Image 1 (cartoon, protein in one colour):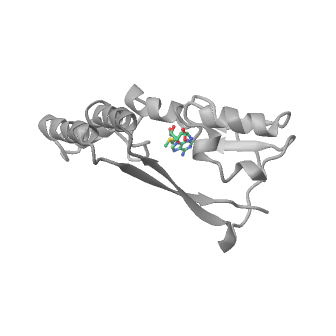
Image 2 (cartoon, protein in one colour; image 1 turned 180 degrees about the vertical axis):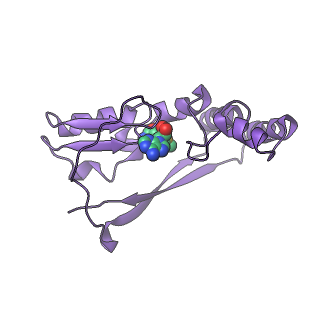
Image 3 (cartoon, helix red, strand yellow; image 1 turned 30 degrees about the horizontal axis):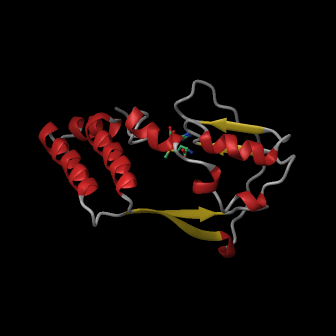
Length: 161
Ligand SMILES: C[S@@+](CC[C@H](N)C(=O)[O-])C[C@H]1O[C@@H](n2cnc3c(N)ncnc32)[C@H](O)[C@@H]1O
């Protein structure tokens, strides 16, 4: 497997998490800056649930979404500039309810054993099937624990020209 791969790949255990995403829960910082008629390029769009929301925000503007797993890449010049310090921010996803723990633990247990992450870990001698099984078990154990919580931190950069 080449080095320049998306580590997790696109197994359903990965895509179920991507498909859950909306512009509001994953790119809320961007929404106030989008206007009808804007042109938008989404690089690494994955299944495109965020893209669809962004497209609604800029309609009737043009939207191009690309992903390395797609056969055809479409790019256009311009649109990117220099980010100022003030343009940096962060947001977090935080999950602690039993339903959220169950959903996230199953998703990450699946990634540990069935996604491209598992394939690469095995192929590169980083983990055996037994190791990956223990990682999956640990996610399930975490999911069943009433004190379990999960936080994912996102860096946000708004670049303007
Ligand atoms: C973490 S996923 C995010 C997908 C989507 N933006 C979302 O948030 O649901 C990253 C995506 O970027 C794609 N990707 C990685 N490197 C890329 C590249 N060089 N050009 C285009 N897409 C790329 C991967 O195939 C993957 O679908």
